[in-house]
Length: 253
Image (tube, rainbow, N blue to C red; front, side, top):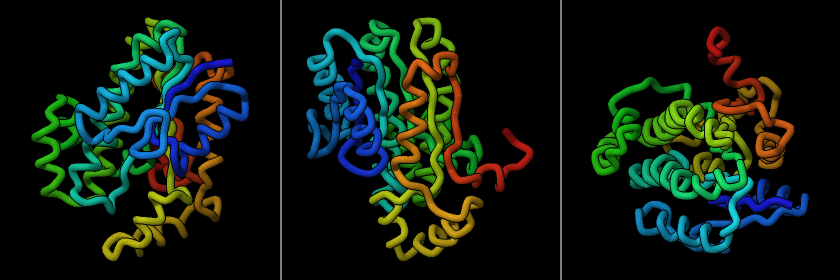
Protein backbone atom coordinates (compact mmCIF):
# COMPACT_ATOMS: atom_id res chain seq x y z
CA UNK A 1 0.00 0.00 0.00
CA UNK A 2 1.02 3.59 -0.55
CA UNK A 3 2.08 6.52 1.60
CA UNK A 4 0.26 9.82 1.14
CA UNK A 5 0.48 13.24 2.79
CA UNK A 6 -2.48 15.58 3.08
CA UNK A 7 -2.93 19.08 4.44
CA UNK A 8 -6.29 20.12 5.84
CA UNK A 9 -7.42 16.59 6.65
CA UNK A 10 -9.51 17.29 9.74
CA UNK A 11 -12.80 18.31 8.10
CA UNK A 12 -14.63 18.67 4.81
CA UNK A 13 -13.06 17.51 1.56
CA UNK A 14 -9.74 16.74 3.24
CA UNK A 15 -11.38 14.45 5.78
CA UNK A 16 -13.25 12.61 3.02
CA UNK A 17 -10.01 12.07 1.06
CA UNK A 18 -8.24 10.86 4.20
CA UNK A 19 -11.03 8.41 4.95
CA UNK A 20 -11.10 6.95 1.45
CA UNK A 21 -7.34 6.52 1.28
CA UNK A 22 -7.16 4.87 4.68
CA UNK A 23 -10.08 2.58 3.88
CA UNK A 24 -8.09 1.45 0.84
CA UNK A 25 -5.24 0.51 3.17
CA UNK A 26 -2.91 3.44 2.56
CA UNK A 27 -0.90 5.35 5.14
CA UNK A 28 -2.04 8.99 5.28
CA UNK A 29 0.05 11.65 7.00
CA UNK A 30 -2.25 14.52 7.97
CA UNK A 31 -1.12 18.11 8.43
CA UNK A 32 -3.66 20.38 10.12
CA UNK A 33 -3.85 23.33 12.44
CA UNK A 34 -4.78 21.30 15.52
CA UNK A 35 -5.92 17.81 14.57
CA UNK A 36 -3.22 16.05 12.60
CA UNK A 37 -0.11 13.92 12.70
CA UNK A 38 1.68 17.21 12.17
CA UNK A 39 0.11 20.34 13.68
CA UNK A 40 1.20 23.50 11.92
CA UNK A 41 -0.07 26.97 11.05
CA UNK A 42 0.32 27.07 7.28
CA UNK A 43 -0.29 30.80 7.10
CA UNK A 44 3.26 31.27 8.38
CA UNK A 45 6.51 30.28 6.64
CA UNK A 46 7.67 28.58 9.85
CA UNK A 47 4.52 26.47 9.89
CA UNK A 48 5.02 25.46 6.27
CA UNK A 49 8.58 24.39 7.03
CA UNK A 50 7.35 22.44 10.06
CA UNK A 51 4.95 20.60 7.77
CA UNK A 52 7.67 19.87 5.22
CA UNK A 53 10.11 18.64 7.88
CA UNK A 54 7.40 16.53 9.52
CA UNK A 55 6.40 14.87 6.26
CA UNK A 56 10.05 14.08 5.51
CA UNK A 57 10.43 12.49 8.94
CA UNK A 58 7.31 10.33 8.55
CA UNK A 59 7.81 9.43 4.88
CA UNK A 60 11.54 8.99 4.60
CA UNK A 61 11.13 6.37 1.85
CA UNK A 62 9.08 8.71 -0.32
CA UNK A 63 5.49 9.65 -1.10
CA UNK A 64 3.04 8.03 -3.48
CA UNK A 65 0.90 11.15 -3.37
CA UNK A 66 0.42 14.59 -1.88
CA UNK A 67 -2.82 16.56 -1.58
CA UNK A 68 -2.48 20.21 -0.45
CA UNK A 69 -6.11 20.50 0.63
CA UNK A 70 -5.88 23.08 3.43
CA UNK A 71 -7.80 26.17 2.39
CA UNK A 72 -9.78 29.16 3.61
CA UNK A 73 -13.00 30.57 2.17
CA UNK A 74 -13.96 34.14 1.25
CA UNK A 75 -15.60 34.84 4.62
CA UNK A 76 -12.25 34.69 6.46
CA UNK A 77 -10.75 37.89 7.83
CA UNK A 78 -8.22 39.30 7.19
CA UNK A 79 -8.34 38.38 3.52
CA UNK A 80 -4.56 38.00 3.44
CA UNK A 81 -4.96 34.73 5.39
CA UNK A 82 -6.72 33.32 2.32
CA UNK A 83 -3.77 34.35 0.18
CA UNK A 84 -1.25 32.79 2.54
CA UNK A 85 -2.94 29.42 2.99
CA UNK A 86 -4.64 28.84 -0.36
CA UNK A 87 -1.71 29.74 -2.55
CA UNK A 88 1.61 30.22 -0.78
CA UNK A 89 1.26 27.27 1.60
CA UNK A 90 0.01 24.93 -1.12
CA UNK A 91 2.90 25.79 -3.43
CA UNK A 92 5.60 25.86 -0.74
CA UNK A 93 4.74 22.46 0.69
CA UNK A 94 4.33 20.88 -2.74
CA UNK A 95 7.79 22.11 -3.68
CA UNK A 96 9.10 21.09 -0.27
CA UNK A 97 8.08 17.44 -0.67
CA UNK A 98 8.90 17.20 -4.37
CA UNK A 99 11.96 15.04 -3.67
CA UNK A 100 9.79 12.52 -1.80
CA UNK A 101 7.37 12.38 -4.72
CA UNK A 102 10.17 11.90 -7.26
CA UNK A 103 11.51 9.00 -5.20
CA UNK A 104 8.24 7.05 -5.61
CA UNK A 105 7.04 8.57 -8.92
CA UNK A 106 4.12 9.96 -6.94
CA UNK A 107 1.19 12.16 -7.81
CA UNK A 108 -0.07 15.54 -6.62
CA UNK A 109 -3.71 16.57 -6.67
CA UNK A 110 -4.26 20.22 -5.80
CA UNK A 111 -7.60 21.73 -4.83
CA UNK A 112 -8.56 24.51 -7.19
CA UNK A 113 -12.14 25.82 -7.52
CA UNK A 114 -14.64 26.62 -10.22
CA UNK A 115 -14.36 30.21 -8.97
CA UNK A 116 -10.81 30.31 -10.36
CA UNK A 117 -12.32 30.94 -13.78
CA UNK A 118 -14.46 33.81 -12.48
CA UNK A 119 -11.58 36.29 -12.19
CA UNK A 120 -9.06 37.53 -14.67
CA UNK A 121 -5.29 37.31 -14.70
CA UNK A 122 -4.68 40.57 -12.85
CA UNK A 123 -2.05 42.25 -10.68
CA UNK A 124 -2.99 40.12 -7.65
CA UNK A 125 -2.50 36.88 -9.59
CA UNK A 126 0.81 38.14 -10.98
CA UNK A 127 2.07 38.93 -7.47
CA UNK A 128 1.18 35.42 -6.35
CA UNK A 129 2.91 33.78 -9.30
CA UNK A 130 5.97 36.01 -8.80
CA UNK A 131 6.21 34.76 -5.19
CA UNK A 132 5.81 38.27 -3.76
CA UNK A 133 3.89 37.24 -0.67
CA UNK A 134 4.06 40.49 1.31
CA UNK A 135 2.80 42.61 -1.58
CA UNK A 136 0.13 40.07 -2.53
CA UNK A 137 -1.17 40.00 1.04
CA UNK A 138 -1.29 43.79 1.22
CA UNK A 139 -3.24 43.91 -2.03
CA UNK A 140 -5.69 41.19 -1.00
CA UNK A 141 -6.44 43.02 2.25
CA UNK A 142 -7.47 46.05 0.19
CA UNK A 143 -9.87 44.01 -1.95
CA UNK A 144 -12.73 41.69 -0.94
CA UNK A 145 -13.10 38.06 0.07
CA UNK A 146 -14.23 36.78 -3.31
CA UNK A 147 -11.31 38.43 -5.09
CA UNK A 148 -8.82 37.06 -2.55
CA UNK A 149 -10.28 33.55 -2.76
CA UNK A 150 -10.94 33.26 -6.49
CA UNK A 151 -7.62 34.93 -7.31
CA UNK A 152 -5.73 32.52 -5.06
CA UNK A 153 -7.30 29.55 -6.87
CA UNK A 154 -6.71 31.14 -10.28
CA UNK A 155 -3.03 31.58 -9.47
CA UNK A 156 -2.78 28.05 -8.08
CA UNK A 157 -4.22 26.69 -11.32
CA UNK A 158 -1.73 28.74 -13.35
CA UNK A 159 1.16 27.53 -11.17
CA UNK A 160 0.05 23.95 -11.74
CA UNK A 161 -0.14 24.36 -15.51
CA UNK A 162 3.25 26.08 -15.66
CA UNK A 163 4.98 23.41 -13.55
CA UNK A 164 3.21 20.21 -14.61
CA UNK A 165 5.52 19.48 -17.57
CA UNK A 166 8.67 19.76 -15.46
CA UNK A 167 7.20 17.57 -12.71
CA UNK A 168 6.09 15.06 -15.35
CA UNK A 169 9.63 14.77 -16.69
CA UNK A 170 10.60 13.59 -13.21
CA UNK A 171 7.76 11.08 -13.18
CA UNK A 172 5.42 13.09 -10.95
CA UNK A 173 1.89 13.78 -12.15
CA UNK A 174 0.60 17.19 -11.10
CA UNK A 175 -3.18 17.71 -11.46
CA UNK A 176 -6.05 19.50 -9.73
CA UNK A 177 -9.71 19.11 -8.99
CA UNK A 178 -11.91 22.22 -9.19
CA UNK A 179 -14.94 21.78 -6.92
CA UNK A 180 -18.05 23.91 -7.02
CA UNK A 181 -20.16 24.56 -3.95
CA UNK A 182 -19.75 21.63 -1.56
CA UNK A 183 -21.39 20.95 1.81
CA UNK A 184 -18.41 21.63 4.07
CA UNK A 185 -17.66 23.76 7.15
CA UNK A 186 -15.96 26.24 4.78
CA UNK A 187 -19.12 26.66 2.69
CA UNK A 188 -21.31 26.84 5.78
CA UNK A 189 -19.25 29.75 7.08
CA UNK A 190 -19.77 31.59 3.81
CA UNK A 191 -23.52 30.86 3.90
CA UNK A 192 -23.64 32.38 7.39
CA UNK A 193 -21.76 35.51 6.32
CA UNK A 194 -23.92 38.64 6.21
CA UNK A 195 -22.34 39.93 3.01
CA UNK A 196 -21.84 36.70 1.10
CA UNK A 197 -24.53 34.39 2.45
CA UNK A 198 -27.35 35.16 0.03
CA UNK A 199 -25.04 35.15 -2.98
CA UNK A 200 -23.72 31.76 -1.91
CA UNK A 201 -27.25 30.41 -1.42
CA UNK A 202 -28.33 31.64 -4.85
CA UNK A 203 -25.20 30.08 -6.35
CA UNK A 204 -26.01 26.76 -4.72
CA UNK A 205 -29.60 26.90 -5.98
CA UNK A 206 -28.35 27.33 -9.56
CA UNK A 207 -26.30 24.09 -9.74
CA UNK A 208 -27.51 22.35 -12.94
CA UNK A 209 -27.56 18.92 -11.28
CA UNK A 210 -29.97 20.33 -8.72
CA UNK A 211 -27.99 20.03 -5.50
CA UNK A 212 -24.76 21.13 -3.87
CA UNK A 213 -22.01 18.55 -3.75
CA UNK A 214 -20.78 16.33 -0.95
CA UNK A 215 -17.15 16.00 0.17
CA UNK A 216 -17.17 12.32 -0.77
CA UNK A 217 -17.95 13.22 -4.39
CA UNK A 218 -14.79 15.30 -4.57
CA UNK A 219 -12.77 12.64 -2.76
CA UNK A 220 -13.91 10.04 -5.32
CA UNK A 221 -12.32 12.07 -8.12
CA UNK A 222 -9.19 12.96 -6.14
CA UNK A 223 -8.52 9.32 -5.30
CA UNK A 224 -8.99 8.36 -8.95
CA UNK A 225 -6.53 11.05 -10.03
CA UNK A 226 -4.00 9.81 -7.48
CA UNK A 227 -4.32 6.24 -8.69
CA UNK A 228 -2.69 4.35 -11.52
CA UNK A 229 -5.96 4.53 -13.42
CA UNK A 230 -5.10 8.17 -14.14
CA UNK A 231 -1.53 7.36 -15.15
CA UNK A 232 -1.60 9.52 -18.31
CA UNK A 233 -3.13 12.60 -16.65
CA UNK A 234 -0.72 15.47 -16.06
CA UNK A 235 -1.50 19.17 -15.95
CA UNK A 236 -5.27 18.57 -15.87
CA UNK A 237 -7.82 20.62 -13.94
CA UNK A 238 -11.03 18.64 -13.55
CA UNK A 239 -14.22 20.52 -12.70
CA UNK A 240 -16.44 18.64 -10.25
CA UNK A 241 -19.19 21.18 -9.76
CA UNK A 242 -22.51 19.75 -10.91
CA UNK A 243 -22.25 21.46 -14.29
CA UNK A 244 -21.72 25.01 -13.02
CA UNK A 245 -18.61 25.81 -15.04
CA UNK A 246 -20.23 24.52 -18.23
CA UNK A 247 -23.27 26.65 -17.52
CA UNK A 248 -21.21 29.79 -16.91
CA UNK A 249 -18.59 29.28 -19.65
CA UNK A 250 -20.15 27.11 -22.35
CA UNK A 251 -17.64 28.05 -25.04
CA UNK A 252 -14.48 27.92 -22.89
CA UNK A 253 -12.75 24.72 -21.96
